[in-house]
Image 1 (cartoon, rainbow, N blue to C red):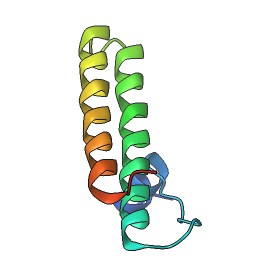
Image 2 (image 1 turned 180 degrees about the horizontal axis):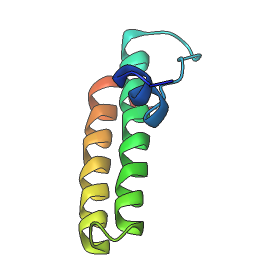
Image 3 (image 1 turned 180 degrees about the vertical axis):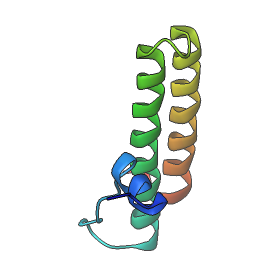
Length: 79
């Protein structure tokens, strides 16, 4: 049985339902957080497989963290 592209995407980068306190901002941040986690997994796999250097992996993770931090600042209030 062949998998469709959508099935492959869901398998490689699963997205879980949001179950916290609902607000559009919380939902958007949750989506950004899940995307961050999936991208980190890919970067780690590329580095482990020798496709990118440890320095390049570090820089990509640092950039992803900066994006997530900016998302938090834009979407969620300071506690």
